[in-house]
Picture 1 (tube, rainbow, N blue to C red):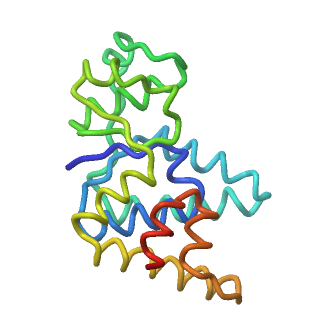
Picture 2 (picture 1 turned 135 degrees about the vertical axis):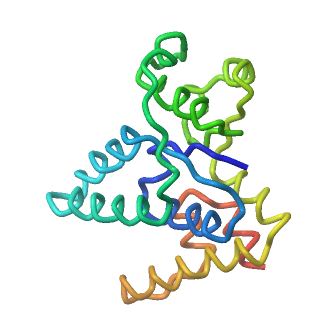
Picture 3 (picture 1 turned 120 degrees about the horizontal axis):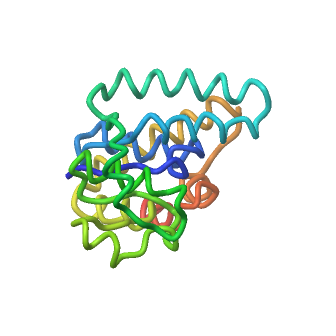
Length: 180
Protein backbone atom coordinates (compact mmCIF):
# COMPACT_ATOMS: atom_id res chain seq x y z
CA UNK A 1 0.00 0.00 0.00
CA UNK A 2 1.33 3.42 -0.98
CA UNK A 3 0.51 6.41 1.23
CA UNK A 4 1.25 10.06 0.43
CA UNK A 5 2.23 11.76 3.71
CA UNK A 6 1.19 15.39 4.12
CA UNK A 7 3.46 17.93 5.81
CA UNK A 8 1.23 18.12 8.88
CA UNK A 9 2.13 14.49 9.58
CA UNK A 10 5.86 14.92 8.96
CA UNK A 11 5.98 17.79 11.43
CA UNK A 12 5.53 17.20 14.49
CA UNK A 13 8.39 14.88 15.36
CA UNK A 14 6.79 12.09 17.42
CA UNK A 15 3.95 11.58 14.95
CA UNK A 16 6.42 11.46 12.04
CA UNK A 17 8.75 9.06 13.82
CA UNK A 18 5.95 6.59 14.59
CA UNK A 19 4.56 6.78 11.06
CA UNK A 20 7.98 6.35 9.45
CA UNK A 21 8.80 3.62 11.95
CA UNK A 22 5.90 1.51 10.72
CA UNK A 23 6.92 2.30 7.13
CA UNK A 24 10.42 1.01 7.93
CA UNK A 25 8.76 -2.16 9.21
CA UNK A 26 7.30 -2.59 5.72
CA UNK A 27 3.65 -1.92 6.60
CA UNK A 28 3.27 0.67 3.84
CA UNK A 29 5.30 2.59 1.27
CA UNK A 30 5.61 6.30 2.06
CA UNK A 31 5.41 9.00 -0.60
CA UNK A 32 5.87 12.79 -0.54
CA UNK A 33 6.88 15.61 -2.82
CA UNK A 34 9.74 18.11 -2.58
CA UNK A 35 7.14 20.78 -1.77
CA UNK A 36 5.76 18.73 1.14
CA UNK A 37 9.28 18.32 2.52
CA UNK A 38 9.85 22.05 2.12
CA UNK A 39 6.65 22.75 4.06
CA UNK A 40 8.01 20.55 6.86
CA UNK A 41 11.28 22.52 6.94
CA UNK A 42 9.45 25.86 7.01
CA UNK A 43 7.11 24.67 9.78
CA UNK A 44 10.13 23.78 11.90
CA UNK A 45 11.12 27.46 11.98
CA UNK A 46 8.64 27.74 14.86
CA UNK A 47 11.32 26.10 17.00
CA UNK A 48 13.78 28.91 16.29
CA UNK A 49 16.70 29.25 13.90
CA UNK A 50 18.02 25.77 14.69
CA UNK A 51 14.61 24.19 14.00
CA UNK A 52 14.76 24.59 10.26
CA UNK A 53 18.36 23.39 10.09
CA UNK A 54 17.47 20.30 12.11
CA UNK A 55 14.45 19.63 9.89
CA UNK A 56 16.60 19.88 6.77
CA UNK A 57 19.03 17.33 8.23
CA UNK A 58 16.12 15.01 9.03
CA UNK A 59 14.75 15.52 5.51
CA UNK A 60 18.11 14.46 4.08
CA UNK A 61 17.91 11.29 6.18
CA UNK A 62 14.37 10.38 5.06
CA UNK A 63 15.36 11.00 1.46
CA UNK A 64 18.28 8.61 1.96
CA UNK A 65 16.08 6.01 3.69
CA UNK A 66 13.41 6.16 0.95
CA UNK A 67 15.10 7.25 -2.28
CA UNK A 68 12.03 6.39 -4.36
CA UNK A 69 9.49 8.15 -2.14
CA UNK A 70 9.72 11.62 -3.64
CA UNK A 71 7.11 12.14 -6.33
CA UNK A 72 7.97 14.66 -9.08
CA UNK A 73 5.73 17.64 -9.76
CA UNK A 74 3.22 17.42 -12.61
CA UNK A 75 1.94 20.97 -13.34
CA UNK A 76 -0.50 19.68 -15.95
CA UNK A 77 -2.11 17.36 -13.44
CA UNK A 78 -2.27 20.11 -10.80
CA UNK A 79 -4.04 22.33 -13.31
CA UNK A 80 -7.00 19.96 -13.68
CA UNK A 81 -7.51 19.33 -9.95
CA UNK A 82 -9.67 21.14 -7.42
CA UNK A 83 -9.70 21.16 -3.62
CA UNK A 84 -11.33 23.59 -1.15
CA UNK A 85 -7.87 24.95 -0.33
CA UNK A 86 -5.95 25.51 -3.59
CA UNK A 87 -2.70 25.36 -1.61
CA UNK A 88 -3.32 21.61 -1.09
CA UNK A 89 -3.77 20.70 -4.76
CA UNK A 90 -0.07 19.80 -4.94
CA UNK A 91 -0.66 17.11 -2.28
CA UNK A 92 -3.48 15.52 -4.28
CA UNK A 93 -1.42 15.78 -7.45
CA UNK A 94 1.54 14.03 -5.82
CA UNK A 95 -0.73 11.26 -4.52
CA UNK A 96 -2.14 10.66 -8.00
CA UNK A 97 1.27 10.87 -9.67
CA UNK A 98 2.72 8.43 -7.13
CA UNK A 99 -0.17 5.97 -7.56
CA UNK A 100 -0.95 6.27 -3.85
CA UNK A 101 -3.84 4.45 -2.25
CA UNK A 102 -4.38 7.17 0.33
CA UNK A 103 -3.34 10.57 1.64
CA UNK A 104 -2.29 10.65 5.28
CA UNK A 105 -3.27 14.08 6.60
CA UNK A 106 -4.81 15.69 9.63
CA UNK A 107 -6.67 18.18 7.41
CA UNK A 108 -9.95 16.37 6.77
CA UNK A 109 -11.81 19.44 5.52
CA UNK A 110 -9.17 20.14 2.88
CA UNK A 111 -9.47 16.68 1.31
CA UNK A 112 -13.18 15.91 0.73
CA UNK A 113 -13.82 12.18 0.45
CA UNK A 114 -15.88 12.58 -2.74
CA UNK A 115 -13.13 14.47 -4.55
CA UNK A 116 -10.55 11.91 -3.47
CA UNK A 117 -12.79 8.98 -4.43
CA UNK A 118 -12.97 10.34 -7.98
CA UNK A 119 -9.20 9.88 -8.10
CA UNK A 120 -9.27 6.44 -6.43
CA UNK A 121 -7.91 7.79 -3.14
CA UNK A 122 -8.86 7.87 0.51
CA UNK A 123 -7.76 10.26 3.26
CA UNK A 124 -6.76 8.89 6.61
CA UNK A 125 -5.99 10.68 9.85
CA UNK A 126 -2.90 9.33 11.56
CA UNK A 127 -4.40 7.84 14.73
CA UNK A 128 -7.02 5.71 12.91
CA UNK A 129 -4.44 4.77 10.26
CA UNK A 130 -2.00 3.52 12.91
CA UNK A 131 -4.81 1.72 14.76
CA UNK A 132 -5.70 -0.06 11.52
CA UNK A 133 -2.08 -1.13 11.07
CA UNK A 134 -1.84 -2.12 14.75
CA UNK A 135 -4.91 -4.38 14.40
CA UNK A 136 -3.14 -6.34 11.65
CA UNK A 137 0.51 -5.98 12.78
CA UNK A 138 0.56 -5.23 16.52
CA UNK A 139 4.20 -6.16 17.08
CA UNK A 140 5.53 -3.91 14.31
CA UNK A 141 3.49 -0.90 15.45
CA UNK A 142 4.39 -1.50 19.11
CA UNK A 143 8.08 -1.77 18.20
CA UNK A 144 7.96 1.49 16.23
CA UNK A 145 6.19 3.33 19.05
CA UNK A 146 8.54 1.91 21.68
CA UNK A 147 11.58 3.02 19.69
CA UNK A 148 10.15 6.55 19.58
CA UNK A 149 9.34 6.45 23.30
CA UNK A 150 12.88 5.38 24.19
CA UNK A 151 14.35 8.14 22.03
CA UNK A 152 12.04 10.72 23.66
CA UNK A 153 13.23 9.61 27.09
CA UNK A 154 16.86 9.72 26.01
CA UNK A 155 16.54 13.22 24.56
CA UNK A 156 14.42 14.70 27.34
CA UNK A 157 15.99 12.93 30.30
CA UNK A 158 12.56 12.16 31.72
CA UNK A 159 10.21 9.19 31.74
CA UNK A 160 7.58 9.09 29.02
CA UNK A 161 4.83 6.51 29.52
CA UNK A 162 3.68 5.38 26.08
CA UNK A 163 0.11 6.58 26.55
CA UNK A 164 1.21 10.06 27.63
CA UNK A 165 3.66 10.41 24.73
CA UNK A 166 1.13 9.24 22.14
CA UNK A 167 -1.56 11.53 23.56
CA UNK A 168 0.86 14.49 23.35
CA UNK A 169 1.54 13.47 19.72
CA UNK A 170 -2.23 13.53 18.98
CA UNK A 171 -2.38 9.73 18.83
CA UNK A 172 -4.64 9.03 21.83
CA UNK A 173 -6.27 5.83 20.57
CA UNK A 174 -2.91 4.31 19.71
CA UNK A 175 -1.52 5.29 23.10
CA UNK A 176 -4.43 3.66 24.88
CA UNK A 177 -4.09 0.49 22.80
CA UNK A 178 -0.34 0.27 23.42
CA UNK A 179 -0.69 0.85 27.15
CA UNK A 180 -2.70 -2.34 27.69
